[in-house]
Length: 307
Ligand SMILES: [Zn+2]
Image (cartoon, rainbow, N blue to C red; front, side):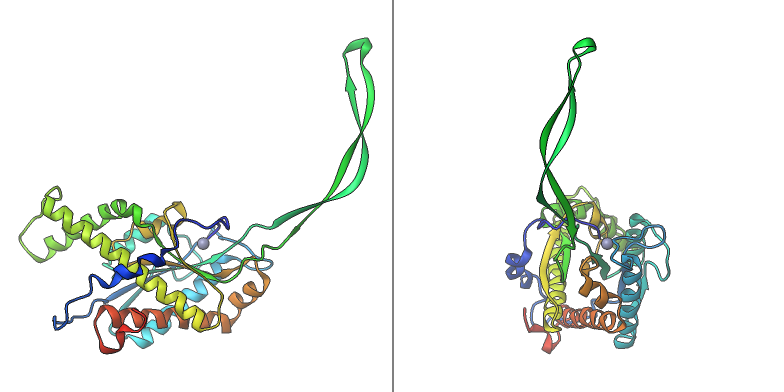
């Protein structure tokens, strides 16, 4: 995703403490929570995404997304793995979110590559004479003045490593609308009861669900970054964003994360992101995070590490 290097929003780790609040009570019957995972390779087709010295973001996103999907299929044959794209094409952001919602995804994982703008430098390089004119008509005169001269050059942005985004908590209301729609559908599917979306009780439930998505998204995002650290990558942490670039996270009525897998503008990262080894490792780190997340949300015994 193209973006400025400035730190967006709050670092979310302060909210981690909340995330254990909604886990199922001990002894409650456990059923599989994750039946469908949506894998979203960012950009595609006419949208190249960020560019490095020799590669485009869209191609790395697709390679990593397909490798991740394959690993998930092998690890969890019972889970349906769906892709927003499997080739070099561009589904709109809305189409991606609609696809995820229509297929009742239980997790949405979007794969992206980061970019930092080149850094501009200018150094003083002496003076030069500049010609200018004063007056008009007959009184017009040519004059010269000395002005400083600068050499300007650009260097690569040194930013590197990974970061994982979730939709900002203060935009939970916006996500709530999509959640309400989905709740209405699901209730209609299963019973005769048609909910009134203006009913305070229904609203409260919808907000709670939205909140739960936030906590779960945060939990998964944190695990992804932990796995990157365990794998020796530089982690820039979990971040919240509520701008257009990650609108797809807002529009998905399920726990959703966007993984920036490295900086294409940092040559060592670009080489890693384009290598089979790097792509396999990134896919494995995200897979391991999903495994831990699944164990946590579905309440198995080895789940609690880290949370
Ligand atoms: Zn991107």
